[in-house]
Amino acid sequence: MNSVVLLDAAVVTRCRRRVHLEHDPGAADAPRAALDATTQRRIADTAAHRRSVADRLAEHHGADWVEVPPELPAEQRRAATLALLVQGVPFVWGGLLPADPSGGRRGGAELLVRHRGGYLPVIVVRHKVTDPGSGARTSPLTQPVLAAARTDPQRKVRPQSRDQMRLAHTLRLLQAAGLATGGRAVGGVIGLEADVVVWYDLDSPTWSGGHTAMVEYDARFADRLAVARAAATGGQPLAQPSRVTECRSCPWWPTCGPALRASRDVSMVLRGVEDTRALRAAGVCTVDALAALDPVGYPAAPMVGMSFRDAVWLARAWQRDLALVRRHRRIVMRRADVEVDVDMESFDEAGAYLWGCLLSGSDIGMPGGYRAFATWEPVPTPDEARSFAAFWSWLTDVRSRAAERGLSLAAYCYNEQAENRWMLSSVERFAGAPGIPTAAAVREFISSEAWVDLYGVVDAEFLCPRGKGLKTIAPAAAGFSWHDPEAGGENSMRWYFDAVGLGGGEPDLAQRARLLTYNADDVRATHALRLWMSSERVNDVPYAGDL
Ligand code: SF4
Image (cartoon, rainbow, N blue to C red; front, side):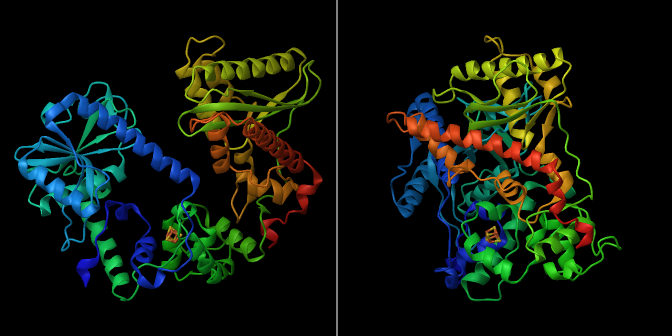
């Protein structure tokens, strides 16, 4: 019975309840969401990245390189892979290893590389795997073998636990099939940069507690296997739902969400698994139990994600179905004579294609209202430099005119991380192009008092049981609504795809207009929210200490 459970590498970094649901025959008809557009696009982008790496390697290695046909059914792919490995083919791409029923594993790696009579796994991922620095063990992309690895003087490893877990999983499969190399557990990763292979020694004690990636993997895998086997055989469930970050993108949320709400589970108001675990261990399992505690008394459990007082206040706000409550009796919102609301739109990692700005306040001899600085050439494109330079030049002009008139200025965005990241990335990527500022100029601006992160202000002033996203807070607090009923980050990606004709079709001008309306509404939302925060109306929101 147990042997029917075969788990992929992904289970070791996945929610335990999800592993349960995916193996519980009773959950086969439970509600599940379809893959969201962002996830679908990421899957497609990763496949394209892998294809491009494969093509480059195949061209370089000729007859030493064999690809297992991806269109074959899984069983045939396994058989074909095994035959190639037994023959000793130096590089096998797209291999699926023989399943390991007793170990409960299945899987493969993008590349299997012959090494000392056995094979090492090399996986290809679409995220960064190194940072500037030194000390990583790397080999050139065209020599993806451990024998060519050197200590890299220009790169240090950006440790990616998920990659290490996948390599460990593949190594255990190779070992089970008698195809592993003896000696230390080693595997390689080709990242987004796709310029080198980064080699991990998975037997190094680099994990917290001084243990190795292999030890970590074995412990996690044994746990997930027990969860899956219990679910598959109708045993006592070993994992219960608990709200975690992964829930946001998990297909099982339509099943877990209502269950958690119905049981008034304490995780509904907490941030992070540690706090949930600590409170449960202290016997505080529901929102109501948490709300009944004294917020300024001795904490029921040590908290790391938020203060104990905030947790109790959040629980009380959740009980009353409030979208937000005040942390302080008096709300502080910084205002200025001249104000600019800024919102940037980017397309994944490819580029920032639109900077939208809403100018308001005292007259500085420039037209007020909304304006957009955009490129409609598909990103990545050098035309992004032009639109960013135009945005920066306009913002600099606004700042100069305000300063010349002795007027104070504030520019607002909602969650500065994205805007800051793309401003800094733009000056780096387009250095020397006309109108591109220096990195120092951008740093000076984003670290100045004039640049205000409204998300940070909301975080400091309110507790928000339903989340602090602009789409949640601006309607609930300031009564703001977006023109487009489908307005949202994920949909905007789809609109952008059509707006610039990424699928190969004609650019859809209606979708461009839709994106501009969406962006204009976003900056109007931050504008409305901060006006509301500096008005008397904000006092209609209950003060948490009064609940
Ligand atoms: S919705 Fe959340 S709790 Fe449920 S399986 Fe997914 S990640 Fe786990």
